Image (cartoon, rainbow, N blue to C red; front, side, top):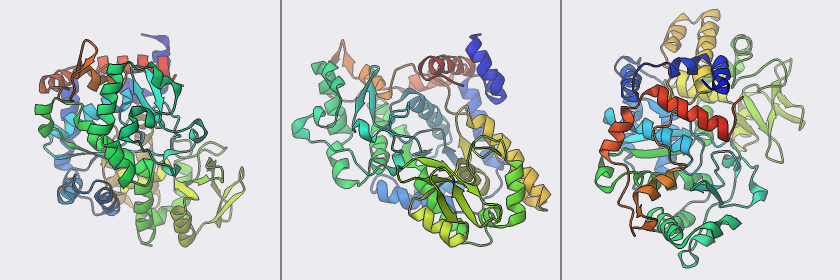
Length: 460
């Protein structure tokens, strides 16, 4: 084994266990979907309401709110590994193809994807543009590159009369040959309707939900598309903010107790100390929320000794720690829920099976143990047993069944012959390709993904 991969596994025992999985992805998919039949009922609906409100706004006439509502109630699956970007980066499109296989076999209509917008526009998943044949193409200027996606106020626009060059800013567009440019212009203007997205959506983040809904079906051969679940791909920061505000407005909610009951908060603070996505005694992590500085950087926050305010020493941020002030700060985007609060709502309060990546595979089970321990300590054994039943080890990102450099490369592969674009986008993955994917050993898919990640982005 590659020494770097061995070092990687030494720090991530959960991922090593998945690597040692003895079967195919078909076997793993069956195992992942089994808890649906025995999953305890969920009596909370804050997240479901927030998702429905946002998606009805972003994808009107594209999805059925009634079907989505029913699915979220009865089949609480959600993917939590993605970054909020155009779905072409190989980690993301591969994870969604695997996720699709699970959702398709469950015979439910939508793939619900919670994609983080906390990453900057220049993240490796490249929200600032797209990958095609190992080349990055920019939509926005370098000056915007460090702004987190969910705080980015611009939108993508392009004019058909000016062609592809009107939506690509960097010099690398000159590397396209005429057939590649013809293909990409068809993809962006005909298939993805860039002009429509520019007219109907106010923010790039909202456009991504629409563009990925459109892009997704072109991964598949035309006759196969009616069988493919629709992609409900939302930016999670806004959704969690809305769900969190709903929970905070209820003084009896578990979220309110976690934040404002001193005994519960003390136990949470102690039991989650040192878990990735939570906080440490020193400067790592943040206590419940990240502060947003004037320069739109995230700042660590800590609750003062008296429990009266959230403080960020780097930017001198001070937020009174009470219900109304926290809600106002969330609405004004002065603070952002931490990963701890994301999963407090998604997995533990709302009960969704969160299918994540190799980091989540380590920290989410640790969070589960910390929650159970906390609840037992504060005299809530029934709630502890309820949280103990949550599924927290679902892996969906970190496996490569297809080895194209990007999703756009995959579409190009099926829609050209000898470098000549065929003039439409009828080609794509077939039913037999998906079944072949399902029959691949999990170990092989993880091994290739780890080698690629170690080479391209590095892993600590």
